[in-house]
Amino acid sequence: MNFDFPAFLVLASAVTGGIWLVDALAFAPRRRRLVQAAAAADGGMSGVAVYREPVLVEYARSFCPVIFAVLLLRSFVVEPFRIPSNSMMPTLLTGDFILVNKFAYGLRLPVSNTKIVNLGEPRHGDVVVFKYPQDGKTDYIKRIIGLPGDEIWYQNKTVYLNGQPQGQLPIGRYAGVASGAVMTGAREAVENLDGVEHHTLIRQGAPDLPPGCRALAAGPIRVPPNQYFVMGDNRDNSNDSRCWGFVPEANLVGKAFAIWMHWDSERDGIPIAWDRLGHVIR
Image (cartoon, rainbow, N blue to C red; front, side, top):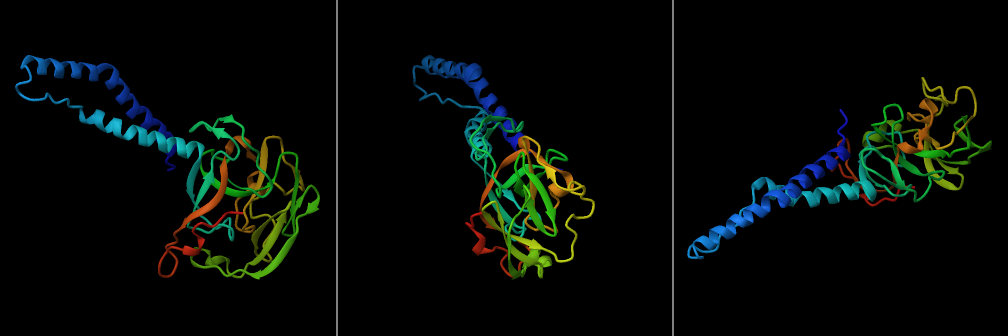
């Protein structure tokens, strides 16, 4: 079951804020009047009358600003995600905790994801988090290969962008560790995608299209308006646009820009990879 954390934050903000507001407008003034009346009745002989706020209101007043601040930060500035699979190896590893820039492509309302301010557009090579088009809920992370209007083709492990093969510089065999050990022996290369260099993994002998993937089966395809073609850097272990097609612009969540933690329980010894902390995502 996918827990909708943005919806929870919106609901929690509304509930705590509503309790605080209703009390401030309807009940707090009455309590103050009662305290003042009690103090006036005994002429102050029994000491200072104590103004007691209900526990529920006290908690709501304390938590509302915190919850609302988290909602604003997570919705409009930066959001953390955890990488659950090997599809973006070697750029991102299983267990990486990443930060995503939520305003790179514009400001969106929480829950509905409706864009209210346009601040930028995706570019070739951007690593993006988006809602999986097949269910509109699951968070996926891939690299943008094709922009609206681009012609995309993938053949013999090579990306063709508008008819031009995107260069690859082989750098040897990959040596994986922990959860990524299954990719040991794959060919690692530096791909130049329209000037953006990044590392990829390829299994020699594997088909260009993973089993069941049909989006590119009939030949090159053109990216429709307001949609994007994405692929994982682990080319033979990625469920991406080659299989299910394009990512609508409305599904974009943000641009991944940094790794703030790495925790993989399959690592020998300490599960934290200290050398990945603070790593910039390219």
